[in-house]
Image (cartoon, rainbow, N blue to C red; front, side):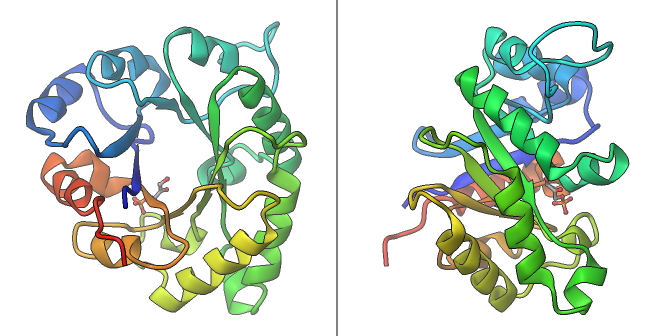
Length: 236
Ligand code: 13P
């Protein structure tokens, strides 16, 4: 079964980095890898692969919104995906689930696939409210019209960039809860949060895990090549 591997480079990289990365990146035609570089480098990555996504987009289609980029523009330059509601956007840019929902609507209209990120903080998990919090965030973030494909990425905030991965049980339980709450059954569910070359194989084999969203480890081609090699799992 082919799993989806998404590289979120966040605010990292340069033209030289991209040249070096793709000189050493190894993937097979059947692999399903999506790269989300900083907006300035989308075109550079599009020179190497067609599966490319933005890390965010505006909640408006066009107009006087200095510094913003619209979903239509991402489509125009050849992107196919957009990450939405990443925890770093939610916390540093105060994005609400309602904003994420609005963006998701525009993204779908622009014929792009939104990858909608959700996840609880450590405080929420410690209080035993992780499931309720995530399901509420999900219900408010989903696009109003949902006959088109979107992806969901469960990224517990406390696992992002910390080296702390959610336990297998945490992932199994949360992904099952998310799966049951989704209006359509075929929506791909990704896990993100300190995925690396050591744990990717185990995480990708868990039930209801259709792929992974990788931050830090996607910036090192040696590590990312390992993760990509795990994305073809035998059917069980
Ligand atoms: P890390 O893999 O660095 O923990 O980042 C995860 C993430 O935020 C991907 O979107």
